[in-house]
Image (cartoon, rainbow, N blue to C red; front, side, top):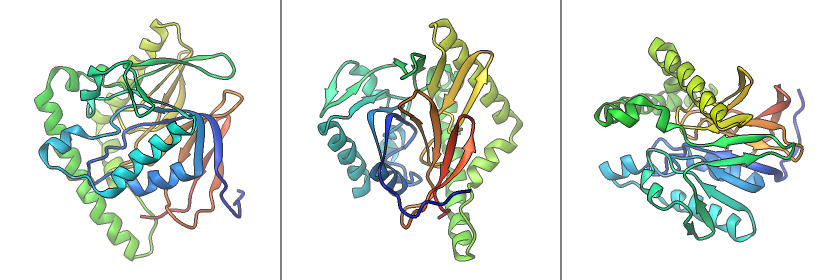
Length: 274
């Protein structure tokens, strides 16, 4: 395992980020800001739920670091990065503005992305394949409340573990994967989204929504989920040769990234911090 002595900015062909949930106290905005400081790309896809409109409707919470993320993305757009915003269910208000540009950031419902090696990937948030979100909004809100409770427990445990000198660990992510129905839902979600990509003649699909970062093949379709910036702090990067990398970012300062093999590319993990 190799540890680099310093961290220069890494430049990719494309970056995919989703489920930041700006406006939620659980959002790890400082981690994302640090990630954006050290990573750049020709194109950045914001794959939904960047802003958490559901929580902002319940209680307004918008500290300065939320503005900093927006300004960071706008600055990248001004400097020539193509930034594409594909709304999710939490920022669905933007779905009324497809094709619109806001400060250089373009809004699209979904998009077909062609990689450097000529493969086509359907890029979408994925909530349209979540039956609860689409057909039972009240249940979706109740589920969102329960998730908030898990996140609050997560914050408390993280503080305790930090005081004990223990590394960051996500209770909410662990709890989700212990529930049989949640595991079954993730598997079914992946299958349905992969089928949608197949219907459109794509080689793969890149989505978010379920906060479960992964890259895997599903019956000939490459399924890629970007994860989130509430639990896992993950992003997907496309290199100049068209290969993908899942990046996990778990620190804010004094970073010495540790590359670890994952698929055809390495998984980059910064030293653990709560």
